[in-house]
Amino acid sequence: MVKFYFIERNLIWVKKNITFSDIAKYTGFSKTTISRYFNNPDSLTLENQQIIATALEKLNYKENKVARILANGKTEFIGIIIPNLYMHYYSEILNQILKTYDSFGYKFLVFTGDDHESTERKYIQELLAYKIEGMIILSHTIPSIELASYNIPIVTIEREDQYVSSVNTDNYMGGVQATSLLAKTGADILIHINADISRQTPSYERIQGFSDICKEYNIPHEMILTDTGHTYDETSRILKDLLETIDTKYKGKTKGIFLPNDTFANIMLNHLIQKYGCLPDDYKIIGFDDSPVSREAIIPISTVGQQIDKIALSAMDILNNQIEERHKRKPTLSVEPTHKIIPPILINRKTTLPVEH
Image (tube, rainbow, N blue to C red):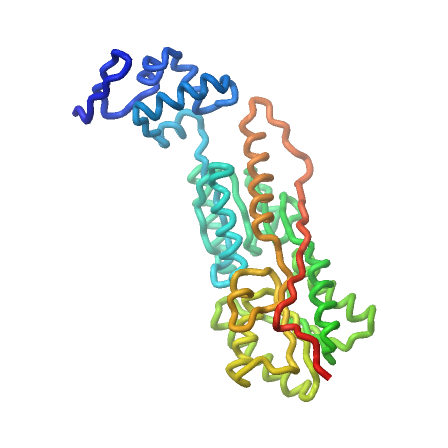
């Protein structure tokens, strides 16, 4: 069925879909050269690339992605397994990863695992069935030794990473920064609330940083390592109960509370405002991540900023290098995983104002 007529350079196109043969005839190049333009453009001169690009525009060429996948075996899909989207950190880092499309050209298939190991394994098998190019894993349930066994490029972010490549924040430095800021407020007692996480998890270093600073400077402190819930409602209820306990235990003292992320810090702030109508002077709060909620909270929350844009870009850069290496005729497989550490940035806002005497 004829869709349009196109007349150019004495050629009449009566085509529904433009093919490589059509492009070759229009430009005077061979079909092999046209194929190289799509699959290995750097093998052509810039002049010839421009000639073909102009031809594609004039011919109103629409690329058949399915045909291209069948031809070169590259799906250009990246799989992402993320724990959840109620945590502002995860939603923000996903947003930053998706923004890398213009830089790397990959599309993304995203699953939320909700900390269910069997579910995440099912999702990984689903992704592998789509012949994805690689994976970015933020969930914690499946050990890295198992991830490495899938024999596909993988980069993890903020999780156990012994056997696969990763990008993480310098969590120890972040823990030190948060603790030092709380100490400078003049708080009588410093408290860190966190999940009872494995020492193999990068964010455990926040706990270690808090503990080391408090012990080194003889700062009264308490670590509350407990189940922090798997949904927003669970976490909110747990933090509300912990607030009541802290209120009773440290009545009359100024309390500096270091929360493991900005979502938790915002929940704690909301409970305090609901109870007292304001952020009481005897509470100082700091979160972690510098996710949007820390800036948009009813009182802007002090935080340790993970450079989420740099983390996302670095993860994609490492993954892309691995993918490109695998597509070489003679790939050089890296023996050791690549691990990149991004420094955090301390951000002092209104929830850590110094104690007034």
